[in-house]
Length: 403
Image (cartoon, rainbow, N blue to C red; front, side, top):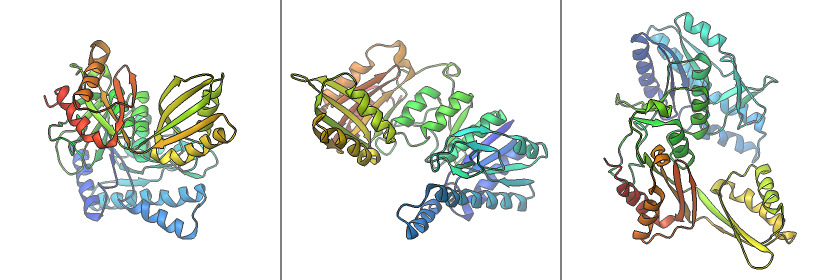
């Protein structure tokens, strides 16, 4: 088998942990597998490098930041390769450039456009363990780029797809995907399997184990993903095609996202194209809008409510202010004391009453629902943040996920 293994910052946080990773990689190699390893920077290293840059400039050029930040992963890759060589294994470290990862030109948040795997393939044929610096690539001009948050996961999945690997293992500090955050309820338990679509919903709805871009790519490239812990031999959770899961649960998990802000636009001029103009400008400002609710108001106005990530709130306010100043919006309010709680499961497609149970559970606990969004496999509700954990525990009980 050809296995791609990815180790995050906590897994390679110090020299002892890098040795632990080397031992795990060696064990996989000794079992008769070909291995390609993708590594993140050592935990804290990226923040340290950002601090160095900000010593000189509050707004350092993005291209220079890419050159700087990509060094963290190269350090880890080199150290792991040295450790493996010292243990008697043939190993080679590769930068994103050497591994053939080509991206677009968006510095600090680039997208992978292509991978030329020939260097990795040649090294694997020579019996080497290939250790790739994650989070990075080069654009068409040969400039170093980085992939943004979760970039090393993305590197691993893309490499697994390019190499047609049998499995891509994402190693973190948790043992897999749970029915909800175990810190909120002790009844949460680990899932053996979950579909790409369910994992994509959970990742985009606040579950922190995998970044949604990497799940999207795994689905597109048909890469079997396993997420598991670097610090135990416990089996992880397989993320795969829906048809590979024999028994599809009604609900697989409850997700909580506290990184949400609600924006309410009141007295919006009710004319054709106004919503298009507002949300196009938000898109151009790189503001990712989540839920949207529009209500017809009195006379010739309407109201629009939508949610954004807290980090996008400043940019969203700047866009909204333009419309307020030119008289298109009468008033605007902002609320950061909210959260989004979501029920996710492929079984919803063929069972009625899932949403009704969620709403009834909220009512039974005197939790007011501010906004609702649904899809084939999820029900999301915006509620006051003070009820976040109560809502998660109540929904987990209502759908009997402890079973």
